[in-house]
Length: 509
Ligand SMILES: Nc1ncnc2c1ncn2[C@@H]1O[C@H](COP(=O)(O)OP(=O)(O)OP(=O)(O)O)[C@@H](O)[C@H]1O
Ligand SMILES: [Mn+2]
Image (cartoon, rainbow, N blue to C red):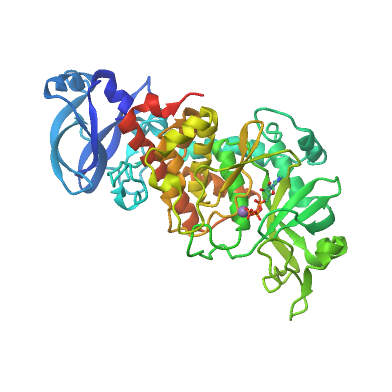
């Protein structure tokens, strides 16, 4: 039961722990017209188990819960069961099951309509389903001290499809790409960095993927090898070339290795799914070295190209880390794959991130000071802090641990430079979430968006959208990792809500 439901009649109920009930399965029965779905129940089923939440309520308040569950109407029957916490502690708990005993579905049988959960259940009544003792993941978080945290998951395949459909309209249907880049250049809005309706994002992606290249140069800023592509309409693109195969695992520090071109593009889709509209459109593009680059290269770029032993033209570029022996070479088709990122000629204001890494063995203040967020709130607006927390969530999902500075346009952080994500799918560096767990705040809007994406729909939606554009953006391990990290975000928010209450944590601005 969601905490706001339990608190309806039991304002003093206190969340105690997640726990597992063995020998039962979760099922749904009895269609409730006003819910447009069936009610949840548990059914004895040897070999199955159901995760749930254990709440502590006063014994004398028990009748209220019974009332809520319609015990006197024989909707539910209260039973005592033994549940086990993630620490292995057993507790006797009171739970409720429907008075009708349900037969188990046989293999291949589809669920009758009266036994399907409501959309509300799917969207909001998150099923405690997957959890773990998070002591290992909270190693860097002094506040949590290895607290066990419930991690929620819902089966939201239905939602995933509707989200996909909604995004498909804006990201994929666009075909008229002729003037869209011009429109984008002129775009002025407080809502988004670029046109965002009527299929415009899809048109932009198409345009930056296919438009003729007029000139190629070394990109002026940054430490990583990248090119600046000037399109015939004079718009600019950053081109971050592919440096690794998708299944290459980057070991070592969170910011190790070259930028990952697929991380840039993945980040764009992720932002779209999360409804973050302050990011530069980005798509996988292949450029032909002899057709698109060599004849269009500036003199300066030409000077940073060389012939490989096999005779192909390779580029080592001009940047802080660029080295003659670390070239990018075309594949057997003569093409270089990379992320084409729309370059937005705007005045961004650069700020140092309060939660930046030290990049040395020296510890930063946020790593040692439990009350670091207090210091930040004294200097930054609530809006900016919530914005930084959104960015932290975004970065945590892809594991971009390199956002040492952030750039602001129209008082919004623009998600530039997302190439350090998707390095190692088996690592979840929790430090990246420090803004969230140290401040214990989150924009309500972001939380509502995140809530819709559990049960695999986050990765599924990104995979579907990118697949439609013909690109595979990451390996299965990375997709699973992003879903797993979402669970950890839920866990962190749940931890904060448990500690401070949802009105303090979820901010309405
Ligand atoms: N799409 C964009 N539109 C406009 N400016 C951009 C865009 N992407 C990046 N920039 C600017 O160029 C700078 C360098 O880009 P980026 O950070 O992606 O390169 P980098 O090589 O990864 O640099 P660093 O190693 O310093 O992080 C950014 O800080 C930003 O000011
Ligand atoms: Mn970078």
